[in-house]
Image (cartoon, chains in turn brown, purple):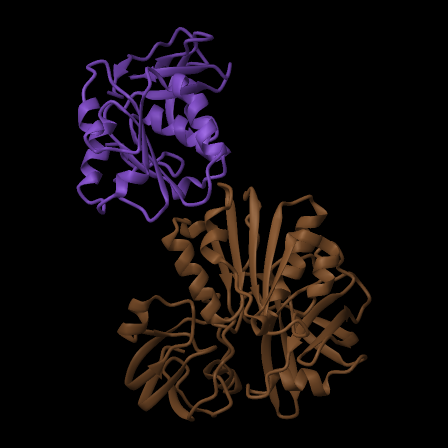
Length: 321
Length: 198
């Protein structure tokens, strides 16, 4: 059993199309008990049994942490991804029995903050749905700035404005509306914490500007689940278990290790939490690091790899597994 | 220099210029030397956005050297109590981008940090550098009274008169070390008093 990955047996209680790209899924426990409590920003790993293949993808819980009768996630369809979101959209119907992990929070609110400034891009809105519900329930001070490509793809924008009125500000790329980031960051009262979730480019931009404008690193929180990228197949030798495995083009290294019957620890499967960090024994080739966990130094020295999202190209790779 | 002992015992660093829009320095006595040392590494124009609040020591030294850094604002205060209203006002009106630098005695660093914590700055976000006396601010855990400038071990509580062991156990909330009765079992037992926090 992997660290922190205690499982929950659930049934899909509802499937709601939200817009052209996003569908919402509701889960309840099969035994009708309440689900475990969680805090805003938490995610669950959903097991998708698709014929021979099992995919494990992380999704932020977007319901109110005050209501644990059900968990809700919103999944954006990715037509060129590895198929997890397509499976959710096409094959998951109400009544389907599924297995999800206990919630884990790698993007929690710092409740010592005087104010919470939230920046969302696209489907990055989901953790903020739960966080705003949590804060609104306790009179918390927050402000949400939400960028989407178009108004119709601004998932839950109407709902958020209805709930929180002027505490929510919307920006639409097609109307050339942009966050005035420097002005926004420079006008926040002392004691504000910043939270950003969205595409990697947005996260990097916000983190860079915040650092340049004097926001201490401990006040800047971000979450970006890197989806495992497809790539050329490669072979790996697992030194501890003495196995040699092949990683398929649509498979992640972690999935290939698991398929070989080896059970490394994991939590997020998105290159964020650090649980599956694996030492490299030897290699002859080039790493394709896609994680947000290892330092640049680690990436350069090629001593470690995050098998959940990173790949390898070359002659040989031996890992300490 | 304060040595590391238990985890709650504060450890201080060396001031270094941070990215930011405003820079607020609070220093006493030899803490001025930490600012002057840091100024050598500061980018040009750094002090244009800086405010220095300084409590000179009894010798009145370093005022001229700090003024020579040409901070946007420079204030002298006779004591921490006298600068407190101003510090609170500055922090209340401040925005993110303000960076705080504290240097000098532990009592000064601790008390300024206490005010800054209340204003919402995380203690790890503040730059600190210890200079000068190791004298401690001590809270008697029995009567809760604070005794300033404790230099001996054990020390007498200035409020209830108990003889206290001055612990390394520190409270950021109170900006004080804990003092615990050293002879609670037998008050006639009086251990020798040594001057160790100089």
